[in-house]
Length: 127
Image (cartoon, rainbow, N blue to C red; front, top):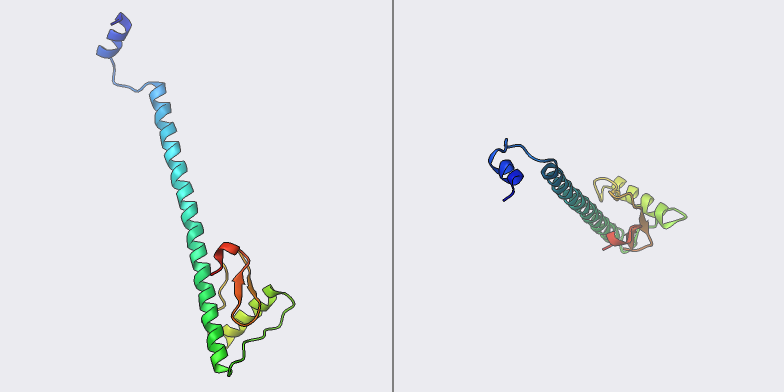
């Protein structure tokens, strides 16, 4: 062994070198990045699941409306499928088929195409 290496091993004051500290910080940064990415994926999946549940609730309310109105589906006013869906959900909430008009947690818009066909504008949210 060289004299300098022997002196460092036996006379060390117990501190960390700059390289050791930098490697530790780098490893922690990588772990934090992985955790943040995983949390974002989980949040997106939770929003998707909530939206699908909202669509199932809306479909159930449409079926209840259909049964109560002797085989007639709701025909809400509106020029676009988005306007029809908003008016439909408000109508179903006012008629107490649902507690309140659901909204997509990801900011998507619900679209109503008639009969039982209600969808979200975010395609991965559709059932």
